[in-house]
View 1 (spheres, rainbow, N blue to C red):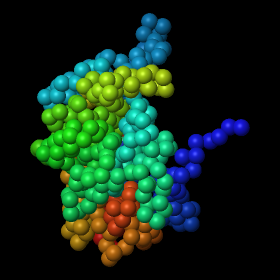
View 2 (view 1 turned 180 degrees about the vertical axis):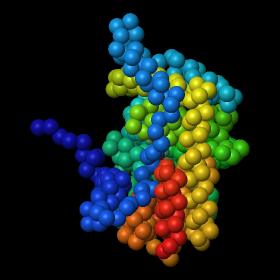
View 3 (view 1 turned 180 degrees about the horizontal axis):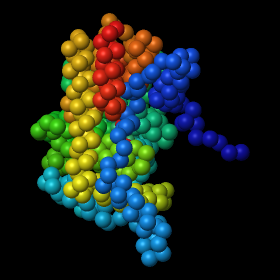
View 4 (view 1 turned 45 degrees about the vertical axis):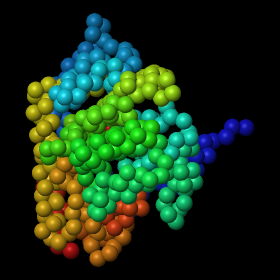
Length: 404
Ligand SMILES: Cc1ncc(COP(=O)(O)O)c(C=O)c1O
């Protein structure tokens, strides 16, 4: 008789955003006349930029002609896209990444969830707390996280690194074992960033301890300040201890189009085995490539027009972030983030729990945000708003929250 993967049964409750969606749809069903403003889920709202649409149309036409039709893509992705990435995302920032270190994918969620496949079950993972839930849940599915303690909201085999206002949302170096360290900067959900010095300390730690860093840079395009690294490879020695994951979702609006990539440097070798080869093997076996059409769209992001258009999109969202952040601060809220990231992380008022504040905002002013505790126990007492709405909605949400 077959057996299921029991690890799935250990996963607590439903995924954060499904819980929110259920609450919101119950509220909407009971209050059909109320206009909700959704600043919860981190999905973009602006349409794809014109240069990307043009590239999509033209690639669709290519697919319709025998001479230009494309079937399966090369395993690691088309060279035109990997070259554009190597040049624009790395070489132009003084980082030398070769195209065979870049693996095109259908997004950062898949890659951050799947990367665990190339590591032994007997690795201890370390995550920021609060954290983007995918890292922990994916490791739980493969049996790496031990048992879940409902009261503590923690797994027995995971090193949690609290990120709080006190440490500027950049965790202390762990004192306990940490083999695979997940870092994400600019951060979801706290909107914080790590400076070059802070990130270098992590790289040095990983090298000293034989750890590997999985660096999620999905929000790199939102960095506005100097001295904030856009890639972990800007740090000395990082190619020997870090994998970097990127996405086209937030910089170019590809959340529904699906495109991302992962960099696995050839310098990453464990016990004589190249991690680059392992990931190539994993992807070659379980993934058949992002569509040609979408990779052409990704290439267009790096064109002069694409760069100008996507920068304007990011600037639009970051203006929302500024409006929300400054407005809430003026109204007496304690706010973080929103400077190098499209997330505003605020302290819930009057000692409310994160879910209490969620219900309060939903019911009183019909604004949907995300409870901080949904991202981990240290997120309790915090709340996340996103800047991905329209300016009108951001202003309206702000007005409503101020009226409370
Ligand atoms: C930190 C982080 N990584 C990855 C993703 C997923 O990105 P993608 O759309 O490329 O799968 C998200 C999406 O919200 C995210 O917040």
